[in-house]
Each structure stands twice: as C-alpha cells, then as structure tokens.
Image (cartoon, rainbow, N blue to C red; front, side):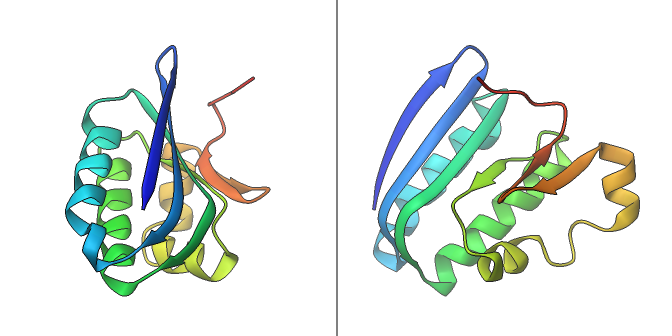
Length: 117
C-alpha cells in the first residue's frame, strides 16, 4: 500500500495505490485516524487500488462510520459499486441523508456542500 497526501486549504486528499491487505493494517489505521481527526474534510481516492481484503474493508467501514458520527463524512472515490455498498450498508438511511445532506453522486459519497476545483 502506498498513500500519498495532498492538502488544499482545509481539504486533505489521500490517494491510495497498490493493495490494502492485512500487512498494511497498522499503516491504514494511522492514515484513517489522520483523515478523521487531523483534516477538516477528507477525500479518499482508491482509483489505483487493486485489492482490499476483509480486514481493511472492516477498518474502512469503521472509519467511515466515525466520520459520519463526527458530521464530517469522507468523500470516497474510485471504489467499485459493490465495495462502496459494503462500506455504506446500514449506515446511510434516508433519515440520515436528509438530516446530514449526504448524497451519492457519480461514483463518490459525501456532502453536497463540499465543492472542489
């Protein structure tokens, strides 16, 4: 796993490459903690990820739930529809979407209020 980080004002973009597997679990935890607690708005880009195992999928789901609970949901790009559904299953009810203004549009999930140039 390789993770590159770029910051644009209060937005942090984390670009993942390679495989997210058990051997990178600790590194992934650190990146996700930074994305949750160290940045106002985080974008997680998975376009160049070849594989995500169950352990890392669970970590991503836990981090995603935390980001929603803290009212700053990740914007996630580059995941297959199947994996994105696994990450968001049981989290994003219609009521939550209405209360927090979340949307899933064009391959990413996040707040409609976030705008990136």
